[in-house]
Length: 581
Image 1 (cartoon, one colour):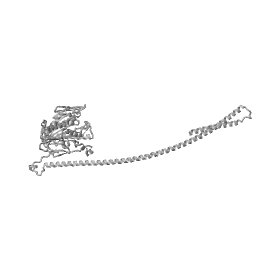
Image 2: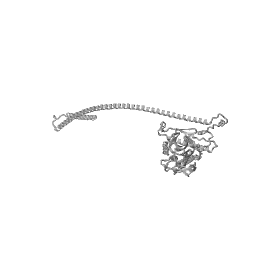
Image 3: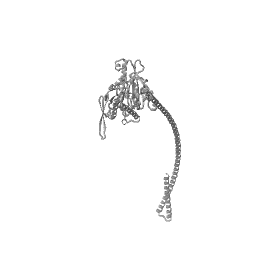
Image 4: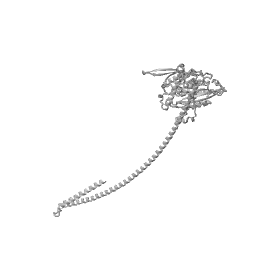
């Protein structure tokens, strides 16, 4: 892909800058004092006796920007030298580090307004401005140290590191939703980061050639929109991945066909998170764990590099580049390929004071690391560069140790190891592909089986429902027939009872009438006898003409008895009639 023209020119160490974001709302502010190059933070350290002591931690950096610093000020101090180094033929790396909601993405990308643009779009403006001035033959071309006899081209790649996966942020939208998205629920297809020939590369990562500034800015906006982001309880739009934009300047001298390449790499690292503050769970918690792991590995690499450089005669440590995808991409720069700048973003909230101190310590360690290659470690590191092949004129005895003529060539061994590693990675990729394909097939079969079961259950339920409705309808008809028959029988019985009751009433009335007639007859007879007795007593006639007393008494008794019988019969008839009613 071209020959790198990176040099070991000054500065000979990493540079570190600190930027404080403004506080939002009425949040309590940590005790932080700053000057142009110094930053001091005071923390309250509780003691066992119940009272706290104030601890001050002071650091010096290449530059410190307060909450009121503007985007142009940050660019001129941090990014302008990086762009100049790119135009002069040196590789550069600029990355933003800090906790979540510290202002890293704002510093790198910025806002939509021209005055809010971050260091990245401003760097693109400077690069294309210098190239446009060169093509126009203006004075600015000489100031940028570009050679009018050379042809220049700008290419770029934009990727994100999301967990253990790498994704192309400039991939077309129609390719982002491949079959992988159907299995994992999100796309695009992960890319493989590999090592070969002492370099780290990303398989399948496309490079776009940008003709002008408008195309470059549009592509960056497109890639930024594809980046993984979500709310984490602290920041409504929190970056859930590390964004890595690599801009290549391809310089082809007159009369040559192969260009020389220099790189300007800008990285927006996702912010470290503490679960007790964000209260994240599920997918957000898994993302936070992956981000924290990457940042922790990066810190370990920097500390090991500083140890190796400060203890050249001691036991050299092996930086764990391979433990994280992001540190694998940083390896070339950390090993001395180009100049590196760290932007430490701080959130001055009191609740984040301890995290702010950790960020300052990270930046302090970073600026102590020299960017020139350090002495090789005592034992071979996983990221060790390929050893140089011995010269053809070198004797066999010089290529062996202790007179052993059968010792293998170290370069050949190294190439064999790399070949085996690549083969292992290919097998692993094939295994993952087979596993994904099997999962897809099993998922399709399970879905088909579930659909068949659903259809069968639906049909069975419909048949059972129809049978139940038919049985219920029959029962209703039977119940209705029985009810109607019972009603008819009841009506007939009631009519019969009514007729019997009427007949009995008529008989009772007849008996009552007969009894009343007998009673009236007895009364008349009693009245007749009474009158007769009265006439006999008042006449005082002859003894022969009077009836016998016994006869009169007998007739009177019979009349009284007849009257009593009549009254008893009447009372009995009335009682019977009342009982029947």
